Image (cartoon, rainbow, N blue to C red; front, side):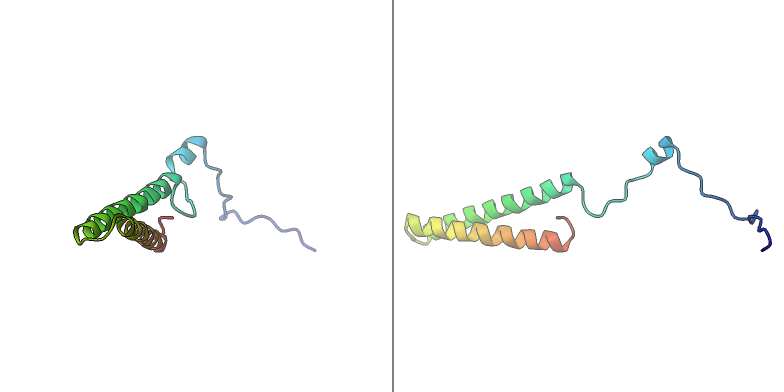
Length: 93
């Protein structure tokens, strides 16, 4: 079998230096931890705002305190869940 010589036109890739690695942005599979925390905070605060609006609206319309609190709780869960679903579809979680 004849001996083969390496092709001089092909080059081996150089390993990047530490400085080059520090300058290149990290390729991650998803959002960072900070983005995830902010997305959860936005969902919770949006739910709290919706619950407050529901509480004020039901009390204004003459509902008892217990019914108003129940409506506010259901609104909080619904709004928070909906915002989390939207954030997941936007790849924020």
